Length: 241
Image (cartoon, rainbow, N blue to C red):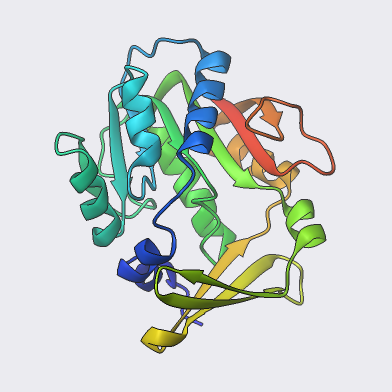
């Protein structure tokens, strides 16, 4: 499996399969951030791995001037089609094309992290995020909860997306560090693989601390409830030291 699997997957096929993402959930997480950090944001915001822009649009509705960054041309085109004025940048999250201290807040939402095989690359992302956040600024990471993924894993399912039949197979790697999903689209004769690192909440805290953040809060759901063993999410709020 190629290390850079994400370069091929987040294209037209991804958009066809996940056309109707949950905008209610996007509004929930943006409301949660506003409640935790204050309703106003007096510096630019970066939506890191913005995809088709659903979170960016919610952030802008809040009045927070938000730049979207993603590696996928297809997802950026979809974001542009939804909002012709949104500031969008194509770049790799490991090398952010922004000056030091450019943002008051960087968000990375809906498990748009953990894609690399080598944890040194994950740390590299967070170090560069810390570089572009001004001192005292915020970083919010919305991630899967590793224990809940392991507990609730569905090995195989099949669904339809429009006229497409989608077969999905999931497994945990032998070392327990990754969840892998194989997506087969029968009508297109295409197979894609997602691989995401199963970071424990404590590991994410340690990475953020190493990168130069001070972790303020770790929550377990978009409604603001505390982290717990059966929490569906790991939502980390950190300040730039």
